[in-house]
Length: 450
Ligand code: PXG
Ligand code: PLP
Image (cartoon, rainbow, N blue to C red; front, side, top):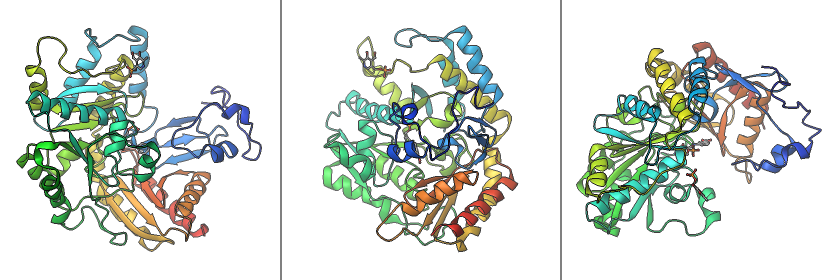
């Protein structure tokens, strides 16, 4: 698609026209820097983005961890187009329309056994907050009103709504916003030291999950509603758990009647080579959150998948009438639900989860070949994800990462950086040669960065 059709005016980085860019207060962005040096994307297809000037950028991040089947998939686009022409919007409060029912039924087909009730949201953040409220509602329904504490984890990311921010473990995301949700505590993160070059899971470390017993002893199990973790922490630099960690969280939560929530907003839909990380690790939570890949990024949508037990407890114990006082105007939106159905079909027809599993060892080899690249202090990987940790500049943490990001982009490669950690998560359609291209471009870029 040409730049003028998209009405994005190409401009040299040195001649910003502030009036064009000023109104949009951009999320998680250095707005002042961006608006002085804008980097725009105009179109996308398959493994690539194209800039307004027509430069081709290899997408090593699946957009923001969401375009798992690659960009511009015609089946998904067509489903959205068609749905828009049939039913633009219909409420799902006390009414219904077919698409979200169809999507929920299809979705539970790839969820772990026992997780078969789906609540729709519009994002991962809404999924996280919905899951936390669902856990509180569950305990109330059982008459355990005292279970109100929520346990997250340091370096956890569960979006930016109040609940997710509170259980999240990123100082920068929390510090600016006061007291947040009451009663939250955090487990220690699973960043196993930054020089281990671990392939896949880390060596067992019983103490990490065992900390949950300490928190139970501290607060009393009768006060704890739920523990929420990302099976693999994504946003804070790809932190892969130690072997046995998730099993142990499962054992301890079950023992104390605490619900276990897996935030699979990133790990869902094939990122690890299976539909969910729960399936990959063989550990089933009580509640599982999804977003991103649910629609292949093509429409905003999230989902919370609850166990039958959680659902039935909340629904059956309520007096006649609304059982769960929660929902969004756009829960199960027709266009998003149509995109979701089409995305699941593309994943299945092309066997993309299995493809990711097949590519994972090749990906692992390629990523670890960067062990001797300049500035690299650690490399972690699992499925089609990798974290490449760089030595921070003295007195300027994040500076090197930011420069690597910019140089890679200008050199035709989209990566993601969090501080000085590069996070890679390509679309699952990636070809082996493109894996090689990512590695070579990163290696060359690291050479040029001081
Ligand atoms: N939970 C997890 C585990 C996530 O990774 C969210 C919740 C929130 O989803 P929404 O749709 O509200 O953004 C996420 C989102 C990054 C990055 O650079 C990661 C996310 C979002 C934006 C950037 O790593 N993850
Ligand atoms: N604010 C106001 C004033 C509203 O009327 C509504 C929904 O009706 C909302 C917020 C919530 O919006 P949503 O349902 O899209 O999350």
